[in-house]
Length: 513
Image 1 (tube, rainbow, N blue to C red):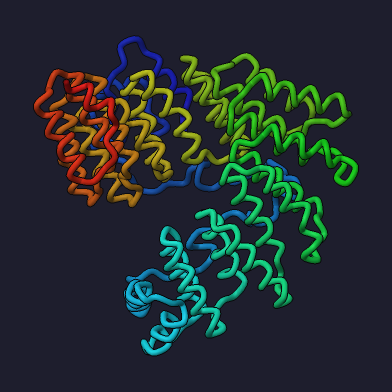
Image 2: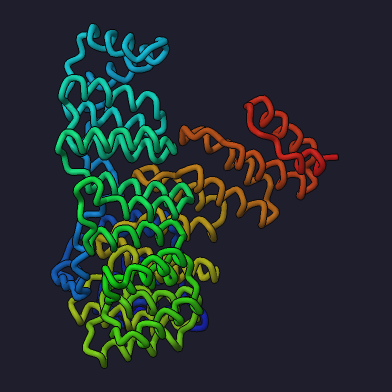
């Protein structure tokens, strides 16, 4: 792709409204671009680029992975549960599963577990491992129903280790830790592997804001005939950092340095916490200096985290400095590094240079992904450079890179009402929402722009997407309408909020007096 040509077009003082179809033909001259220029919307960008025939592009043919992961990071994430990993069905795939759900709802009303189990036995439903796992996953927000499905599945020998671990995760998520420990003890007595279950408990304790119990769980692994190895140690560090307990994770790492000597893998987990979870540059720098004090040399992952941190706060100088230093040390920058660089360059109004890095990625055999394009589209939208954002969206689609929720949300922050409706429709077609969070963002945008009439129209649109407003949506509407002087309309929404059984913020009532 002729990214330098694209950069020159984007940098013109009077930007032409270029056709996305034109932009995706790499050998066009500037004259031909000018002769074919025309205004286009995001809708046209979607429609036109999707009709472009496929062609041999370096983005499609070259793939190159350079970021070497630490051995502990190649292990499967024990904290992650999703439909693909646990291999489940949904009720549309399996009519028997829907029948099972309905039966569970009925037996949950019975007084005792024994009665519930007997009723399920008499239902004629034939249990299977997939059915039990699917039921636990689908009912993960209804802890009691999920536990009934698990108990009945175990009664019929249809609970494998994945089902046990999933149930422990559900119980931990609902802070039913005593019940979770009972399951772990049963696993142990059955001579089944409890390693992942223990790691799940560490993660759930951290999620429940109890880092001390998370660390305690790690230390008692030996009681279950488990030897806490370096992989488990790293998993515990990662769980603490993921849930915001980075200081505790760092202390945990240093306290146990005799058992687990300080090494680059542990420091990278701490760095990731400060760089990508908290985005605290001063703490990241401190950890970087600490590594030097204990004679640990940063690796590719270390540089990737630090460059990401600097880019997120708009520190262009240090981002580029570490990029150069990384290469001098013999480390090959990955796609993540280039994503950080194009983000900070675009954010700091250096779009031409960002596109040069995009071209450099391709020359090196790295394939720009959705995160790469989002790293450019996001800052452009925040700066309200919508024409440039449209062009990058067209380029993204033309290279067969699918937009993500982040892409759509970035665009929604900046576009006018009609294009907002178009993007919401596109999200639905792509099965990427829109979600309740999407509508919260859109409603806040229109009230910020003092366009209450458009906010009300968006409220009505929620029904078409089968989304039920929650207390946050109502609060935004009441506050926004009141701030725009529409007190009668605000009172209507407050009354609807009350009738819906939502908690009423006392400040709303005072606001309408």
